Image (tube, rainbow over all chains, first blue to last red; front, top):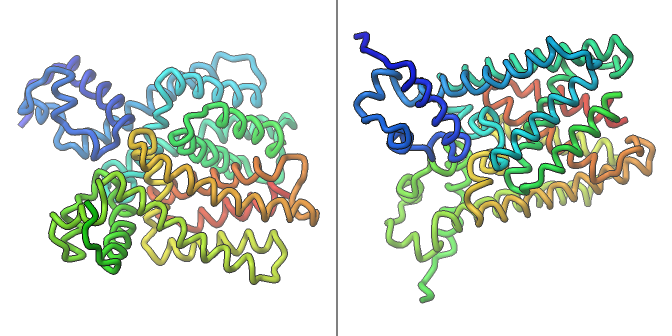
Length: 195
Length: 195
């Protein structure tokens, strides 16, 4: 049965979800709390989403698409060389992270908590990682052509490693609360390991 | 009040906790499920642990100490050179992971889920990471003296990066179920990036 949806409410449910799930995880975020914050009665949640699983899968999609849009706009309009562009993207990501209280990355947090167990979310996480990796790999490839990044390892494998260092670093700052650490490892990777 | 404890029950509670929390996370693991598996009535849980927070903090400690003991025994008795020793440690870790259904690393999973929110666990996670890092850093330092690993970056910073790549890679295999990926990034890191 197709029910009447208010797109504004749907957006608010997704946006509150991004905030609360990043902070408290999948199992730590009750639907009731989200619904209370957005002021929506419980019954009508199911007008918008089939289940909590599918809702969180859409949260993952919206979260990564919103961030990717910012990154893509920057990549398309910048005149920075590819290595500087990579550094700027991570710099901007760390600044955003600091402004949101160092809660880490929604996709990384959910991969750890439910990546292995909830399949709708697992597929959304796979897609998100794939898209991020394609942006990193594109810039790394260009930097290799420019001679700014070593070319003894394929661009897509370097992109994997850079993404994993980033995700591992994000885990670390959840327990250490020190984003300077994140800057140190990402910029040492780009300036030294990958040169 | 000090109550009578059966050390065997305490160990079983911790061991079951390691298994269930690795699989289902902090919020996804109810005490009831653990108690049912170990066949202990709910009331007596509090003879052993003050709270779920403190219980999970002890789980983290036991998990990382058990693994560290194996690693330390290997480091102390091996005649392998330090770079080979590093590779063997990761090789053994991946084999253990595969034997347990790729559920990832308890400390990494918990860092993502509750590292920012539950302070007793946060401190246990910090200690665990510190101990792991010290082992990696020790071997990397020896490999630098041997000329097997680059020495333009301090051993402890390389250990940070290696640990973060590992943790990021563990997140990835939770969604991709492909431990070959983990081998590829860890061995490329050790054989190429760190040389």
